Image (cartoon, rainbow, N blue to C red; front, side, top):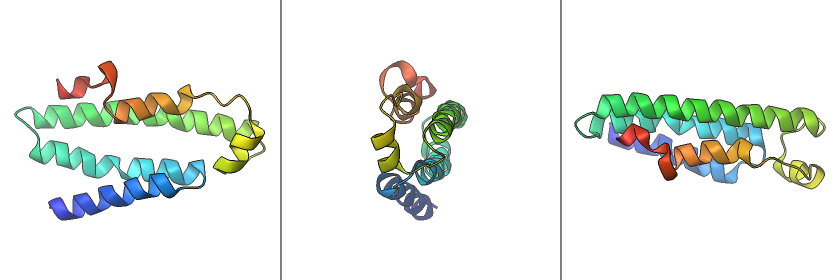
Length: 116
């Protein structure tokens, strides 16, 4: 069970880093959520199920926020998800649209309450 979850997680991580548009980035971002949920839920500590559900809910909230940011960029910058085009054409990209979900997923700061 560990090997398939690890393979899916690695595929998601590689996809996030090689994606050239925000749509693929978002798809691979969500692909990483499923194996992380199972890895926490099966091999976690004493309260692993509680931690896995809380992790899933926090991450889905962050992902929804990121999706709204990507859709705002899509409609503002000429109906494209291409990262290179968007960064060249849109000078006022709001970093908060993707920094909040990245911080939730990467367990930075006070957002790691699902591990408590």
